[in-house]
Image (cartoon, rainbow, N blue to C red; front, side, top):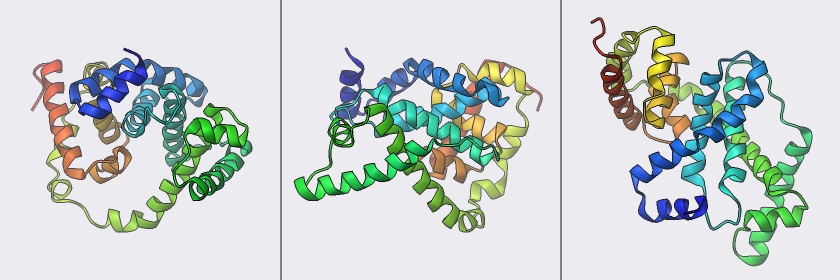
Amino acid sequence: MTTTELLRKLRDTGDPQLREYFIRQQEGLVRHVAKDYVDSGEPVEDLVSVGMIGLINAVDRFDPDRGVKFATFAVPTIRGEIRRYFRDHTWAIRVPRRIQELSLRAREAQEEWALRRGRAPTYSELAQVLNVTPEDLVEALEVGRQYESVSLESTAEDDLEDRPTAADRAGEEDRELEALPQRDQLVRALRRLQPRERVVIILRYFHDLSQQEVGKRLGVSQMHVSRLQHQALRNLRKILGPTQD
């Protein structure tokens, strides 16, 4: 079964086990992208964990009928998530000007195509109109999506921060996180978790994001993040064995 066929089956069935299997199979793609940023000084495993967020989003958003390979779609999404990580940590990862300009051209071409034909163009059709490669097109569209996301986040950021959830106020999850072992031991154990569980722990434990912030990154509710975190912590305890209370 090809990657596209597998993703089409995933779209049609929504099988969670198939989804987790596919995400694990594609982790090598994330590592390939993360290697482009090794000179940043950030631990590679941290970059991989951040990139996994992009991979998960790519799996959830990919349309196998749009005429583009999954890797072509996923790489810019993974790269965009890593760039946002650096942006949030005051690093400057500059988007090439040609990609910025292509992002604007692509948006205009999409709208014009939809008006004339009554439907959205496929990636292949849009790339042909703009005379660019599908890879550059998808990266440009991802840049545009990231920019819109940043704008929306900055507009609502203060309101969100002023509204902690009951779980955040109780602090139970935070105490559980504080009880985790030292970083090196934890990193080894994290590799054995399911992808989403690993991402949640990385963002909560290593990057100090709130459950609301993690939910925004993953496109899920704070309640779902809480469930994932509890599940991840239970699995970590099993992997690590007895720990101090």
